Length: 432
Image (cartoon, rainbow, N blue to C red; front, side):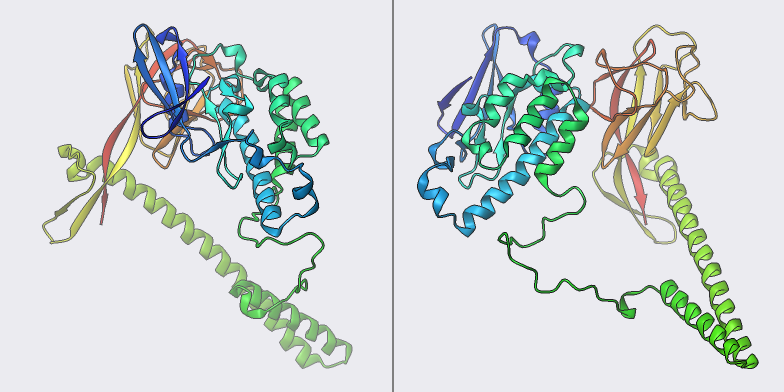
């Protein structure tokens, strides 16, 4: 790659001789990444080739001497701000390593990541890390952690920027995991580097090593207890007093305390069951309302395409219509007995050959009873093949059972030998 200065900033450039090597799906996933570790790629056709550029204005290469912590001045006089920046950099590095495996879930090979230290960038404080990921078409066998290439990954980790925050054991563990294609060990090491596997420490103030917390005691307050917990405490206290009265041969107080504890426990159990029933009832009513508003609302039937619209019914009640995204599978292969289109709008849509287990039934011997699940989360769709013998492919690449893959509009999904084209469509949800 090359670095050039344009009229509006600095760019890292890579030219491909053939436009066919570009994967538009990978380009869309990288551009819309939520991890914020990868620079957005911009592609431009130049003659018979294509140029891919990444803008890194405001960032510096991690090879900049500013990030070398091995000078005597920085080693002997560490400041509190520098220690805090190193701590934040270490946490950011742990999150970054997690995304290497996450790319696999999006069917992007880690081999597309540019690991040349001169092409890895960071902010002036040295906390945020930005990489370039080339949106290239890859072979199915490259969808593995080892495609990251242990040699170039080791070279990256041995630059001063990472050696200031990683121990030699951690570097060796990461490189070994890549060489052996051990995702589990790689993620475990990344979790240790991040240092927040068991709890979220983002809101904790920075504390110098060796300082003690002013308050380490455990406090108990009845005010912080729920109503059920308070009832349980009172019931236990009543039971204790009942036994104490029995020991003192006080029959009447013993009976009264025992009766009180039984009543409190009974009321607590019935209250908890009633609460659970009400929660299930509310969830069921909410789902029914959503389905009814999607299927039978006036805006849905008339095809209103505005982001939000309002109407009034005969009683004068105002309705507000919100967009709801649904998915659609369109058959593109020649398969007998399979419908040409399947639409779905549920949060989870089961696909398989069993009519009792599946929302979309594909009657084919190569389809498992529960073959796959398509989930909708915040307007995005994800494919999760079920654990079994059924084969599922995304853009002709086999996907692993039990893993989740984000799917985009226009992508081809194959269940067994049945090929579909996935698209999204916007419907309207009626809110009162």
